[in-house]
Length: 157
Image (tube, rainbow, N blue to C red):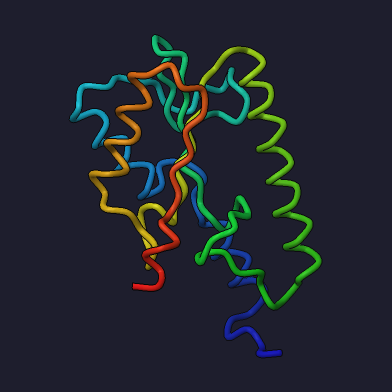
């Protein structure tokens, strides 16, 4: 097993510096939807999971999820080689928390959109305008759930 190239203290500081909101993927989605005339609130604390974007008038929320932190089954997700038990526990808790929060939102009649990081970056990313088009069409519809992830077919190209 390869050893880490930085000390545990430095690694801890690096991991603590990873933001949970206002991430680059979230900012580009927000900007694109705002340019298309959609208005929203950010990170409403009174809603389960503090959704990244809240469209109250449309009864819809959008989460922009990082594939690693939320355990998405895609090419961007890899189990860490060190502290395996810690990471498996942490990511499993994140996934269970997501499931409970989504269920609560559904029960309170919110529509839920999830945009995965792999849709926006990496070898399976979709054309950005396609991602924004899917979000815009979903917001204007009555469809309950939207999930946008990378195109696995693109991985072989």
